[in-house]
Amino acid sequence: HGKRDLTGKRVLISAGGTREFLDPVRFIGNPSTGKMGVALAQAALHRGAIVTLVHAAIEPHLLAPLRNIRTISVTSAAEMQQVMRECFSDADWIVMAAAVADVKPTTYSAEKLAKRDLPDRLPLSPVPDIVAELSTLKQPDQRLIGFAAQSGDIITPALEKLQRKKLDAIVANPIDQPNSGFGVDMNQAVFIDRSGRQVHIPLGSKLQMAHQLLDLVQEIS
Ligand code: C5P
View: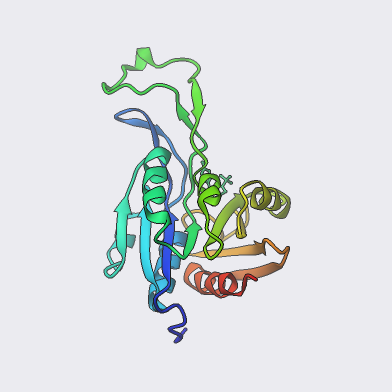
């Protein structure tokens, strides 16, 4: 990709897996490594964008090549929500590639709980839906893109999320196919925009897929 077609565009990307701690050593999380979000940040930077990356837990070595990108590190969904809110109005495109844990333990203990004090059943509470809130703040010239990691039928739940969360587009990607989804360097997806356009992105590197996604975001009408 030799284009500098995103020169001056401000792109805000979330990446990685949020963690909801029960005590200092135990958390609810997910296997996200941040590779897709980091690939998007690299692709956007390469094409001239001004990139901000808000990342929860990611593989630490991924951050090394991200000079020239503003990076902000968070842990929980509530922290990610706070930072995304603050950065939102300065962004033209917002891409939520982060895997946000849907629930958190209802209570947090600042002291490590002894094994015998761990409950048989852990009370859970919902975390805020970050992208759904951002869509209520969205200005007409902003574009808000979500991801939907799915197993089985990836399209139906992604369409439902696109509509319910009022997104401009959603990237449905399978987590039950070889060489796709969490942690690996490859991915495949179906991009669905608000007009109903569906584009299949075949198996390729996450960087290739990032460039194709940026092309498709540009084409949203
Ligand atoms: O988890 P779910 O499949 O609903 O995620 C779809 C999209 O919503 C993703 O872009 C994800 O980053 C975002 N999301 C969020 N806040 C949540 C859950 C998901 O912003 N609490």
